[in-house]
Image (cartoon, rainbow, N blue to C red):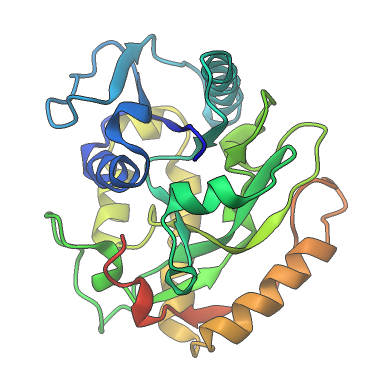
Length: 279
């Protein structure tokens, strides 16, 4: 099987990082996780002893400029991992988990090893929300996220070229690879959990680091997923993901040929029980 690494960068985000480390550590081996803490004032975690964790100088600036610097940094780290002998490098934020459809019967490493990836591969973006009045606050423990959340929006924003097969340059937020196209695999999903709990969104508004960096408007915009999940009727998962994958493969936004588009359509789906205990 292929040697696969996963990298991420976080600041003050142990809640998501613990889930990220637990999932990717089980799938790839904790020793193949490379975690960069944004700021040398960050305390190194003691709960992932085999992972490669490094605190680096804080990336300064507002959202757009800081994101460009962050992804340039992570792209360079991915290049170094290829030089160390890794076959594939997964780059995702700490609130994003790349999952193989359980119907395939393979884990992430086994499945990715079976693919012939030329430049990169993407999972279909699944932005998990909260059905207000029906789903409670997320528990602060090890309970799998998808045991607590059943609904999501299929989102072009999270259909990302997360898996690299060669040293390439990610664009801001891992949303594209500069100068290269993308390929959405039929069995991969990128679950995004960053805005799946209204209480946690409200807490992010109060984070002075994020306010100073200009994230307030961005965070408010993301609460839109919760409203959509609450107010729209959920569609069938298997049928709708197939439609969304086809649309995102064919349709491109006029400003970026190497990003997916879906004509602004809002597809809310109910996540099948087969995913419940994975993440």
